[in-house]
Length: 250
Image (cartoon, rainbow, N blue to C red; front, side):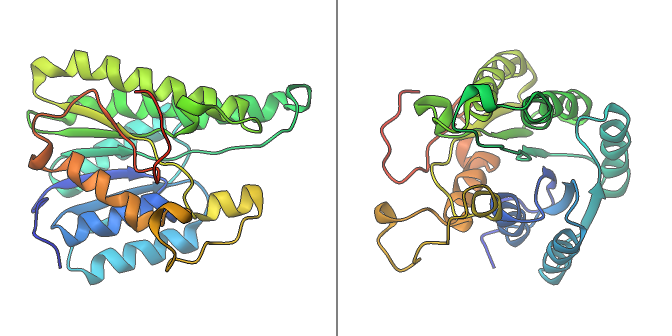
């Protein structure tokens, strides 16, 4: 078990049925938090994550829906507050990507889906959770190294990740008087089901040195724990870069 840095905290995480979100959920549970998960379609893995959290002795709840659906976000936030007694940490992690080699090949439907999932839904959910947060609460958004470096196959995805950086910095300014910290994490390449599905990449050998392979979700999750804990009491409006040594500005 952990050091209980999040003891008796209530956390809402989007996209925590697998990958980084799941790793964060389990790490937070080990540190004493109760976890509510929003997932879009993978019910089987969401149920597995819920069971793993409960096996750690913490409360867990899962909610299936689209964060671009205002009513769903509103009802979910209210239910989490009712069942868990509040929300202390919001982790906006859900996201999608549709690679295209050429901008002319970008499908309008995929562009709109990417923006709806990655930034519009994030803003909607945050808007509805925000009134439930209090001094000492924390919001953590998942952006990406692509926000800083770009990606030749992920034009719209990279654009949403840049928007997340700006959203994080702006909300942090607005939230300072309320004592609510708002930060982001910008992973580099991570071995997740999404990247494997998108690019067909096999997971790297985890025994290789960190800078010679993609990160594991568990390695990235530590940044989210830091930002959610009192260790980051002086950190707001910032972006952490667990990216294996990529040089980025910001």
